Length: 174
Image (cartoon, rainbow, N blue to C red):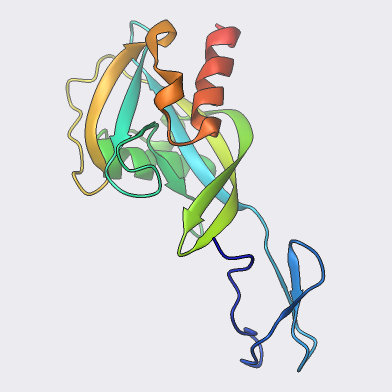
């Protein structure tokens, strides 16, 4: 992984940015400062009437073949709840309104993308469904899905520790 995702100044195009610290990079030509800040992501913890959770197996990197929860980057003009609903629809075909999602907690994460490990702030939202009979996976996003009782979730198989920790904390809260 690279030390910085920035190869050129986004203001003047000069190369050779200097690291002021691990999150700030300065352009020697124009003085412009570029920062690495956490990227917000929404993650859906979806439970059925039997308190079983929907788990996915990732179909792409990072974490190809590992377990996770539906989720992804929050897009401009979206709330966390809107992003959780969109990602759930895109990945597993469950068409839930944003109002079905309730904020649970935020956890830090790292996400490898384009040769750099970006810091993310994963915002977890909980939604409930009667059952998972209408799940239809998107093969470019999800290899398979499983429905697990909370105590049987294989936490060591998750791509991201933040996802496993959210499930641990949800189990402790109920």
